[in-house]
Image (cartoon, rainbow, N blue to C red; front, side, top):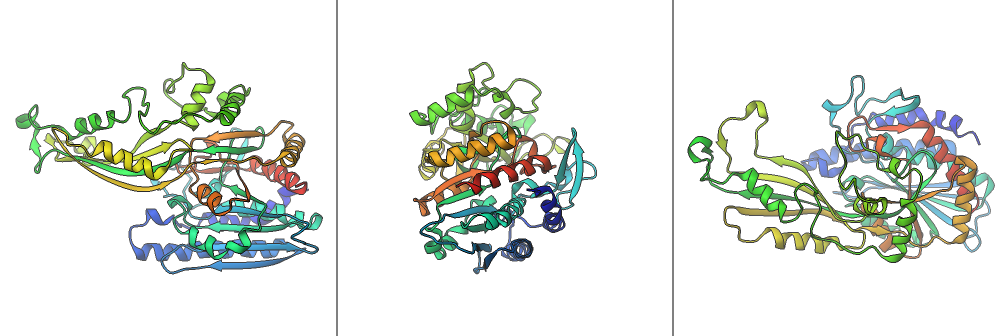
Length: 466
């Protein structure tokens, strides 16, 4: 199957989508901005529809572009080939999203821009640069190219579920899922094409951590004071914040003291197998100036730290000037944005409540303001069955000459828990081509073209036989 040739036909529309400057609603401040970007989301979905209708010829294609006041749009597409019988054939769904992370425009490399499609060769590999290339705008095109061939050879039915609030915790998707409930309950499989792994084989996600964010502020005074006069008497907000966070996370090791759970036995066996994988170190290959955390531990322990145990990252702060603007003031307060990852089986709402109980005590030198924000539950994959695993191994061997890898990921896909709750009889799997070098959410986001072609071919061979 010539998927490279098909992709060339998709490329002009894909370029248009990358160059649309839409963002997920959480990153927009006003209702007016959100309304404006909803129109951009719709524009992207309409371009996807054009490609689907142009490409899929051997089936009935039904399109439902859904819009609700105050919410991002949702696209549901049904592709039903001739001869489909729901008693005999499977219904297979594909989830993806079109909303994007903030652009971080000033950090991109020379000649590259978040909303300018750029093709470049990096270390001998062709890559497409631009915001949304790898996360997640490639997915509907890959799916369409696969489905356009499958409908000629099988009688299975296919659904597309495409949302526009994933990067904001999928805050708008639930009402659309409820509207489509009767149809969605007919799905046998749902592939969430928003995950990833390496380029040596196809990766499926076996577990995801939950997550939540919060803003925490320590306040020490009502007025700023000169450090020469007040230093040593008036508490320094930065150090008091450091003390507060040390109640949660060990300084130096960054080991989070709360939210810990044991790894279940059936998951532990998966992790032990993966820790023996010959390319284990490639999975966690980061460009560091010194050693990573827990570098002296065995592979299993490092894996658990990366994909199961809780972690805390300070992703933002306020109240301190830049170094070139710093004077001699002790500020009144210090605010941080905290991002927690929690074990896949830890309740995210309980985690937010527990953190509040720890932070909002009566401290001697400062007041605390704690504002919990968005959260999402973790997820653990279910048993997909021997038939699926057999078809997957065969497809992976044919394309990669390697066995597939079921990879736990320390990140979160908010929609996974919601989908699992809504579609409890459907086998839900997460896969995709995101990797460490994709730079998703960061500057220089890119899509590895050869990796995408191999993934497309492997998924086609898998779906042809289930």
